[in-house]
Length: 216
Image 1 (cartoon, one colour):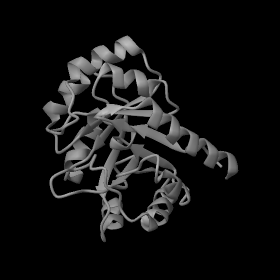
Image 2 (cartoon, one colour; image 1 turned 90 degrees about the horizontal axis):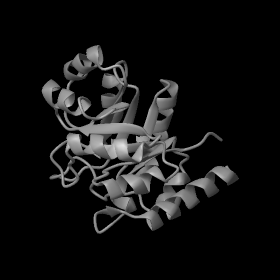
Image 3 (cartoon, one colour; image 1 turned 60 degrees about the horizontal axis):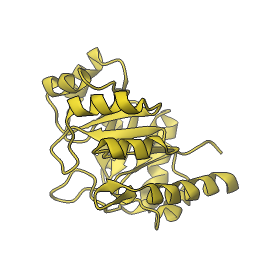
Image 4 (cartoon, one colour; image 1 turned 30 degrees about the vertical axis):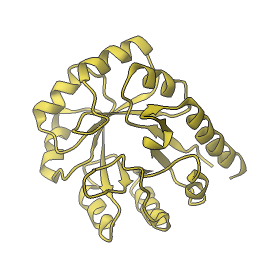
C-alpha cells in the first residue's frame, strides 16, 4: 500500500514549526485567513529560514483577494495554495494563471460535495474534505460522517487528484478513519494541547499511521 500523506496544519509559532518539522508529515500548513490560528507572513518567512524544513508549505486562504495572496507569496515559499472559502471557478482560474505551484480546494461535507468537486476538477490538484460549524470554516475539531470517505476517495483517484480528509481527526479516532484507507489526512486541533502543537500527540498519530501502513 502507498504511504498516507499527512498534513499538519495551523502552525502558529516557531516552536510549532520545529515540532511539525520533526514529524513524518509531508505537508505543513499556515493559516493566512481570519482565524484563531492566523499568522503573519513576514514572521512565517523568518521561521522557515530558521528551521529550513524539507516539508511542503501549504498556505491556507479563505476568500482572498489577489493582493492578499501576493503579499503572502512575497514572504513565504509556498508549495501549495489551499482555498478554504466560497471561491469561484473564476477566482481560482485567475490565481492559476500566475501561480506555478499546486492548488487545493477545501470543501465541506454535505449532500452535494461531490457535485462541487466536479465543478473544480479541471482547476485544482487536490481536495480537502472538512467539516464546518456555523462560525468556522475549518479547524473545528468536529468530524463528519466518515462513511462518506470511500466516495470521495473513489472520485479523487478516478481523476488522479489527492484528497485529504480533515475535521476532528485525533489520536483517539484516527484508527477508525484509517479503516477507510484514506489517501491523505489533515490535522490541526487534533495535534494540539493548549493551542500548541504537541510532540506527544503527533507521535501517537504517527504510530497509528505507520502501524496501519505496515499491516495493510
